[in-house]
Image: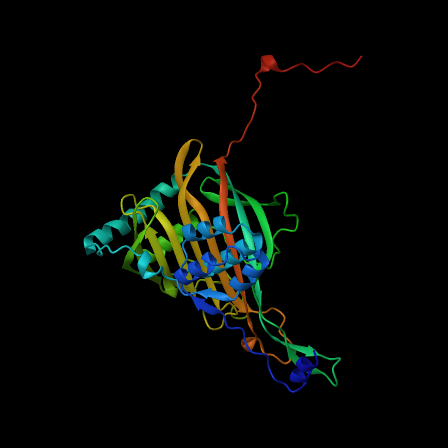
Length: 371
């Protein structure tokens, strides 16, 4: 402690945290050699890593099965979710030639028809949104008034860690998503109002992105291997003047919402046009406090009322913005950035039924007369 105090008095900053960058194969090798490690020890080791390529949901599910410890599972989730906006490794991309331009246009047209005609045909249903909230704790300057005449110190960086979990009922009614404000049993605290939230995974975000992309730029990217076969991945870019993607944030004074330029990927079933993955990266204006705002939604087959539909099964959202309370003497533009990450899974799909009982006049019991 004395050494630390002397360093602070001398004004020497603590070294910044630097994660060790690894590939998915390297992480696999580390995990294969760690089956006998204690849960807490392995989780701490994983928290110091950063993936250089995307870990698929299937890969994350495999890791979670092999390592049931809750600390390790949370660390693997944070690690994989943070990589959700990266490219897959070359080994995981099928060696299939890009289709002709006419076929690319056909796939895009199928996706547009799917969003405009098929999505609105979804039945009214209920589902459960399960959210795990992650945050990091940036290393930042802190004022210590009790040491000598007052000095600045540096707090220790803490990697992404779980700060809360919640389960919320979601109703999809007449093409609109309605989130229940109640929190499911077992999660009494619920998400705080200042935490990152997303909506629109059940259809609106698809309509916005595909509609904007058709008026922006869409190019062929690559094939990816899905559960049912190869998926066509298209890259799109939407300029700010054509953007209908609303992001509520603190930008210029007096502006509470922004329609930023954005880009990303759309993974499409080439046979049906079903959108199976949507990735969106907002190109934030430099005047915004929010430095990063990314979201990815994965869709899959779910059973509702005895029939199969394509619905959201997972989403990941990630933001980076300055810490809310900047220390004395630190200007907001240079304040350290806090990362917030939400892992959301959707399950418990079932039909929404409004029950009512109609009584005919013959079945109505007459009121009792007073004696």
